[in-house]
Each structure stands twice: as structure tokens, then as C-alpha cells.
Image 1: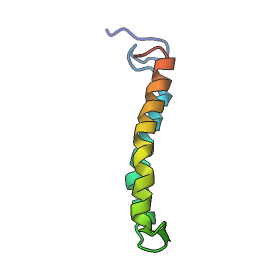
Image 2: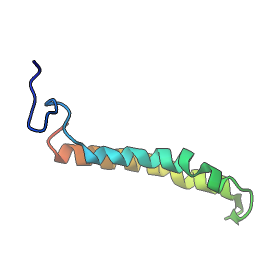
Image 3: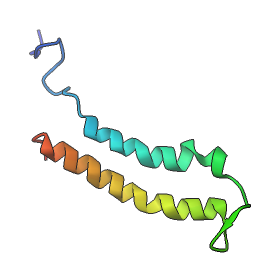
Length: 77
């Protein structure tokens, strides 16, 4: 019989809500893509899709940093 904590879960399966930050890049790049796949309007002379990708790219390391920071706050490294 496996060791279980209260609630019937195994010890390694604690909830880790900070990892939900990792869904942000997925949503920005794939989930919203059908909505932003346009040539017009142009923003700063760029097609909107290209501008969207330029904004979404720096969000990926930010989301990973937030997930790591939240996970470390729970005592994991």
C-alpha cells in the first residue's frame, strides 16, 4: 500500500498553483492566435500579428520566473 497524505493523495502530488503561470505562454501564442491573425490594424508600422508575437515573447520568461518564484515560496527548489 502506498504512503498517502490526508485526502487520499500521494505525498508528491501536492497542489502547485504557481505552475498555472506556465499556461500564459500557451494562451498567448496558441489560444489567442485565431483572434490576432490579422494584417490590419498596424501597430508601430508592424502587422498586428507580428506586434502580438513581439509582445508575447518576453512574457514567456516572465511566466517561467513567476512559476519558479511561487514554487520556491512553497518550499520547493
